[in-house]
Image (tube, rainbow, N blue to C red; front, side):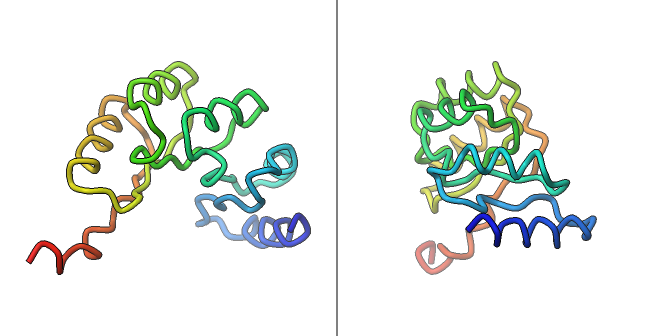
Amino acid sequence: TYPLAEQWLETCSQEARIEFIEQPLGVDEIDRTIELAQKYHTPIALDESVATCDRIEAVYAAGWRGIYVIKPGIAGFPWRLGDFIARHQLDVVFSSVLETSVGKTAALQLASTLKLSRSMGFGVDEWFSEIAR
């Protein structure tokens, strides 16, 4: 809820080590999320709201200039995704959706060509350790 998101952001504003709060409101509440981002010091990152290239473009058009947590394995069209990120100089975190090693390699290659400045969320290899045996 909006009031709960405000409480979290207020509390996190007092802690310097918080990098960002991820998706505090629902995907249909972009305007209210933008409002929160302008009101509080703690950065907000969109995740579920930016699941596909179309959604990334839509929230950008709606005015979102915060952090985008993107899962390249489900976003679609790597060339389109990379072009949009580069053209608009988006602040991006690439994250895993438990993709195969081929998907992970492709995502990391795209990230390296974009020279993303944030850490990536691909620390999921331990979930596949039994499969690899």
